[in-house]
Length: 266
Image (cartoon, rainbow, N blue to C red):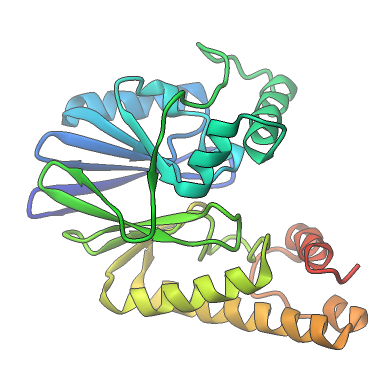
């Protein structure tokens, strides 16, 4: 996609339809969630080199599948949510460290060899809700999106009317819940934002039109509302009988049960 000299290209990984996004404007590039396998990261690097220079890498959230590729662009500033920046700076036995360990375990299991050991960047610029990143002549605005994870952040590319939402609004998955109340609020926020967006890029799955994304948001909110009602009624049976908004039940069923555990229904 190209709008007034701004191009937005999505690269889809062979794992979990994971999206990496390259925004290019006036010879500068922002790479969002560079992933995943080394050959795929080489393709990202080649594309960026053809388009200009990498000025920033953005993380939508802490989860390991979204963060392993930043070292492909060592010259670029790394940006992410305030919560993620704190977690990386603390470098304790928290979620940031656990996600690196999970990434390393995946690589060992599947014999993935990387040029450098996995690590977090030594410095990262924190983005609060509404903060901006300038890429060439294009403004990218951060949108706090907790719920799937405490540190979730979306990115609004204003000139292109594109919204990058991390692990929300996936056509492949049901919501994976970290904080139920926060996730419901995030979906309401996204539905409001979609009023002036043309395209939505989820972290997993194909690019969506505004109407497609809005349909998914409504389905996901109905699912989470039903989950909240089950919590209020302490209805374990009701939670087990819920209809999932999408996905293969054999695959998404276990994730629903994980959601039930996360909200105290197990």
